[in-house]
Amino acid sequence: MIYDAIICGGGIAGLTSASFLSKQGFNILLCEKEAKLGGLVNSFEHNDFTFDGGIRAMEDSGIVSPMLRQLGIDIDFVKNKVSIGFEDKIIHLESKTTLEEYQNLLTKIFPQNKPEILKIIEEIKKVMSYMDVLYGIDNGSATLNWTEKIGSCYY
Ligand SMILES: Cc1cc2nc3c(=O)[nH]c(=O)nc-3n(C[C@H](O)[C@H](O)[C@H](O)COP(=O)(O)OP(=O)(O)OC[C@H]3O[C@@H](n4cnc5c(N)ncnc54)[C@H](O)[C@@H]3O)c2cc1C
Image 1 (tube, rainbow, N blue to C red):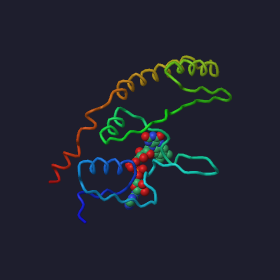
Image 2: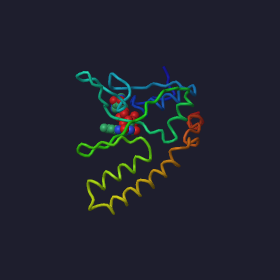
Image 3: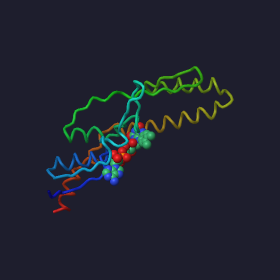
Image 4: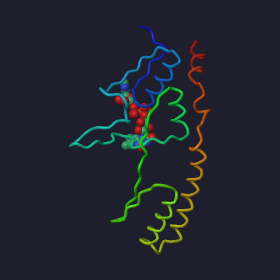
């Protein structure tokens, strides 16, 4: 059998490459040394609990959804829940307003550090606004048909 491409490793990178290349009609051989595909994107069971083998969550980053759409894959994502705990106080991060709750909690526990806490919260707000711009918009250019470019190099 003659292959157009041989991909070593069936982690998310290898699987993504194989999916895009196959969709373009290339004949692919994907080699994985483990019994299961997925690489670090895996989970395992122990004592009736499911553990993450590697990744805990996936950020869309304006890239994952367009790629899935391009591949014709429809997946329901479960929202990633993030909680921060200090001693017996636990804050569940639900929205941007939770940041104020976080600020109040920090200043209550560390009143002597209020100026530093306010500075950090301002920085977090800045980063969050950058992320809104960077990650909130589907990044079309990231999913330009690079497999066509590979195809033209290949032939
Ligand atoms: C503890 C941890 C937590 C993480 N959390 C997150 C997270 O929450 N969100 C996030 O986006 N990213 C996270 N990452 C990063 C993310 O897991 C990796 O960036 C991503 O999974 C890498 O994918 P990959 O396909 O490049 O490599 P891998 O997942 O490592 O896949 C490589 C594959 O190649 C196979 N392989 C290796 N050598 C050979 C060979 N010679 N022949 C055949 N097969 C071979 C391996 O068995 C494996 O299946 C985390 C990483 C770790 C370690």
